[in-house]
Amino acid sequence: MLLSAQVFASDSTRVKKGKPKEENGGITLPKGFKALVVADNLGTVRHIVAQSNGDIYAKLDRVKNGKGILRLRDTNKDGVADEISGWGNYSGTGITIKNGYLYASSNTDVYRYKLNEKGDVIDTGKAENIITALINRRTHNTKSIVLDNDGNIYVNIGSPSNACQITDRTVGSPAMDPCPLLDSTGGIWQFKADQTGQSYHNGVKYATGIRNVVGLDWNQTTNQLYAMQHGRDMLNTLFPSMYNEEQSAELPAEELLRISKGDNYGWPYCYYDQFQQKKVLAPEYGGDGKKQDRCAGMNKPIYAFPGHWAPNALLFYTGNQFPEKYKNGAFVAFHGSWNRAPRPQTGYFVVFLPMKDGMPSGDYEIFADGFAGEKIDPKNARFRPCGLAQGPDGSLFISDDKKGRIWKVTYSNN
Image (cartoon, rainbow, N blue to C red):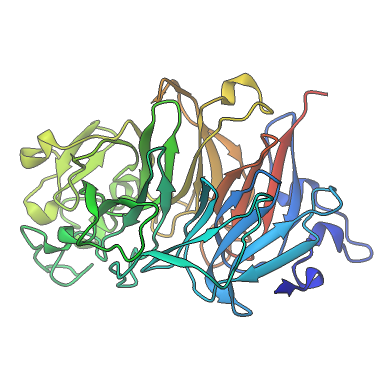
């Protein structure tokens, strides 16, 4: 079904009389970069993927006009989507393309759609349900997806808990030990990309001890899985005698993980303290903010970002349009914090992390900023970056799930 292009037309093409056109669609970028608004008011756009023919596919967290997947096409090559179609009456986050198929996830299932030689979905009403009946208990229920080069698909199954307490996020509630949630959540599962009807009984728990991941990507230089973990919350609220408000605002780190099969990152028993540069025992399990105990042998991140920034997309840049320093580096879209008081909320930007041979080779820098506008908090933020995609020409697409805007970022040294 073809949706109304007028409904989804970019604000940059529908400027009201007397209202100046926004530079770069309202965001700031480094020198030499510029942004164009591809589409606007799409709905809750989560992850996005760019097709080899230039089309953009977007997954909606909430179905809009009966559509949970959108295809954006620029027919006159001016950079703005003028043909928007949609299908898939289910909400969700994950979407990707591999080996002639479009893959998309709901909060319980993963589907795939066959593409023709032009890159179009052959039959939007015919989806293969390749994975089904994954845990969905509202908290951390999004299912991010990525494929490797050997016919496997990886799915994040976040834990429906902050720290595996009997009563979640409640002062005084004891933690469960061992944590029973780890049998079906709190990790990344591996499935076959071409088999229908899979679930826990034939999936492989690829890595565990991961509270929740939204940003997930496959690094082609190392042929390995990488992910951005959302760290736990409420250290001061739950343990005020042990952590002050300032510590709770910064801890724990948001972790960049380089994942191998069988890895255990320690959640809920452990968290990563970026100041001590070690995994420490969580207070629910007898930790005092310093001792490690069972956490000493847990896998550690390869890079630690400040706490509570909420990383929602990870993308390794393989294009040739951007300057050489960006080649094979990592872009991370931070959705933005809600729980850093008394410090200001932050995140709400896209950062770049240089990489060499699959490891960080320097510190992060803020690449795209200004999404939130003047009021930086979840309720009042103008935009919240959520998805990233690389275009066939080496451009970078960024999505927002607050109002449904998509930007195309390009570079020119002229």
